[in-house]
Length: 397
Image (cartoon, rainbow, N blue to C red; front, side, top):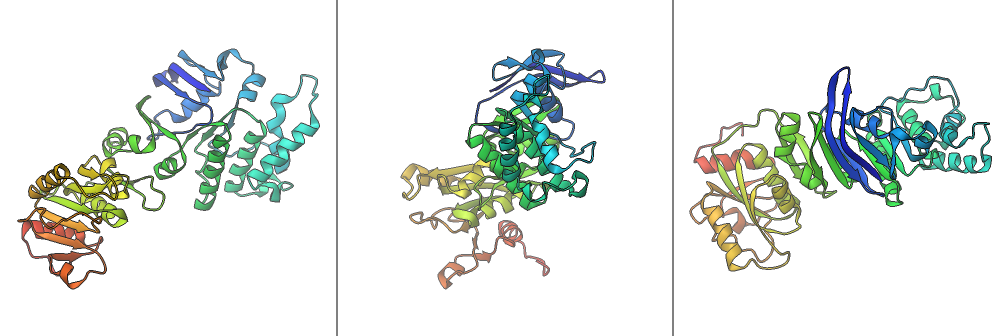
C-alpha cells in the first residue's frame, strides 16, 4: 500500500532523511520510533506529499504522490497532525465534516448522504459525538486530538498517517486511540504512526521501524526491534528491555549509568517471577544466564529480548540430557544460582553444585528456605551480589 524508495529529504539545506526505503502492506499498523529529530515527522510529511524529496519516490496504492493532485492525495492518505491546532472557531461536527473536502467537485457538488454517513460514523468511533455541537475552542487538548482523528477517518482513505497521536492524551484515551487504529488496520486500513512511547508501540503495532540519524536502522516485529543494543545505538543511552507480564509485549526502561558488576548469576525459573528476576539482575549490572526456560514463556522472552545466554526447552517437557548439560555448564560458571519458580520437571538441584543459592519467592516452605538465601524480587539484586561475593549485607539492605 505504501512504498518509500530511496527517499532523501533536506530541510533548510540540511539532509534530514537519506536514502530511506520501506514498504507497508495493506492492513498493517506500523510505528515509526526513534529519538527526537530523527526524521519521523519528515518521513510522514513526505508520504502524504507535503514535502518533495530531493531523491527517490513515494507511492501510495501504486500512485506517486508527487504526481497526484491535492484532491487525489486527499483520497489516498489522511493525516492526524502532531499539533492539534485549528485556525477557526468552528463546531466540532463542522471540523469533522471537512474531511469530506476531497470528495467535493470543483462546482461544490457532493453526495450529501454519503458525507453524512461518514461524519456520523467517525464521530461515533472516536467518541466525539457527545460534544459534536460544541465549539472546537471549548474542548480540551485531548478531545481536540480525537476530533482531528475523526476528521481523518471521515476522509475514508486506504492509508492513515498519525504524528504522535497520543501525545496530548491521558493513558485511558491513549489506549482507546491506539486500539481504534489497530481495529481499523484489522479491517484493512493501512496505518503508520510516529509514536514516542515504545511500550505502547510494541503493544499495538504489527511492526516497528526504528529511525535514527536520518535512516532506518531496524525494522520488524516489536520483539526484534526493541533490543538493548538497538535502542542504545539509536538513543545513545542504556535501556533495559523486558516482557510485560500482562500484555506479553516488550517493555522498555531507560537506565541511568547502569553499574557494571563483576558478578555472574544463573537463573532457573519460569513465568512472571522469573522474568522480573532476570530483568532486575540484568538491570543491576549482573551478567545473567538462564535456563532451562520453557519456550514461549515470559521469562524466556525477557532473556531473548536482552540477548542473554539462555537454554530453552519445549513447554511441559522435561529437559533432555543435552539441554540439562548446557544449563549445568552455565550454572557452574556462575557465581550464584538464583531459583525463581522453576517449571515442573526441571531438577535444579544438581545445577551449580558448588555455587551459593538464592531462592526468590514470597511463600517458601522449610525445605526451600534451607536451600540458600531467601529473597523477593525487590531484594534479589543485593542478596545475589552478596551471596556471590561472600560479603555481609549492610544493615540498611
